[in-house]
Length: 70
Image (tube, rainbow, N blue to C red; front, side):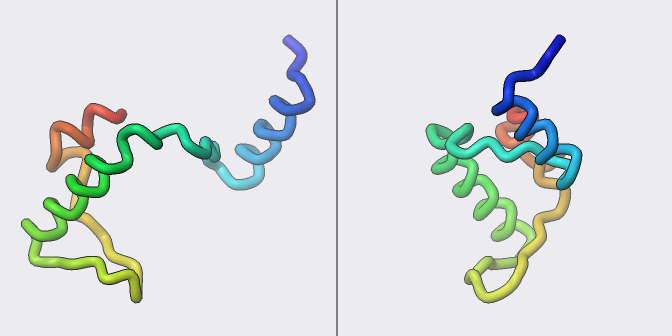
């Protein structure tokens, strides 16, 4: 199977960076995804104020809803 030029571009992107970039792919879900992460951060006593990186312990295992994205 031969890839089209756009497909070749994204294949090179994946080969270079190790992940796919899918702009807008979760646009309809981003509201509840953000709320769910905020809920998990609150449950572990953390907050994200945007000034530094914040980690969430096992988000996909801790939330059935986030796990549904996998």
